[in-house]
Picture 1: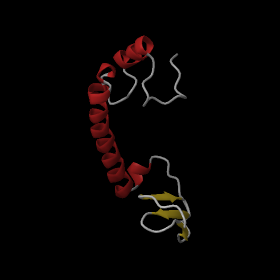
Picture 2 (picture 1 turned 135 degrees about the vertical axis):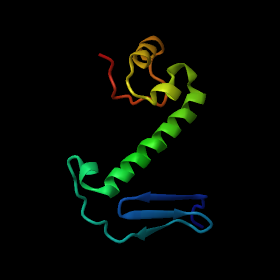
Picture 3 (picture 1 turned 45 degrees about the horizontal axis):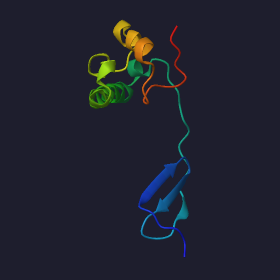
Picture 4 (picture 1 turned 135 degrees about the horizontal axis):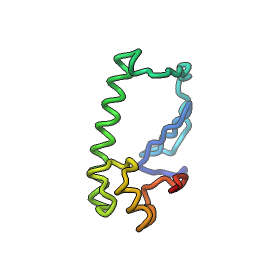
Length: 105
């Protein structure tokens, strides 16, 4: 019979259900048109609130990442390029969570 797994994957416009039954494609309804806003947090309370929630969530995530990579000081710099963080990157190189596209000047 078909493959089975304990996993549910989502991608734009297509979901694959992998679980107690063999996987099968599920067609999702079309996504609404995407809009872009310059300085959207100043134009919309929804965007402003989402921005705050995203930053707080990221800060909490970086504190958890600090336990795995304490030398990088993620509990203090939250991954931003502070002088101390950049010096650590020069000394130790990037960790497995650093973007590979980032280049030190």
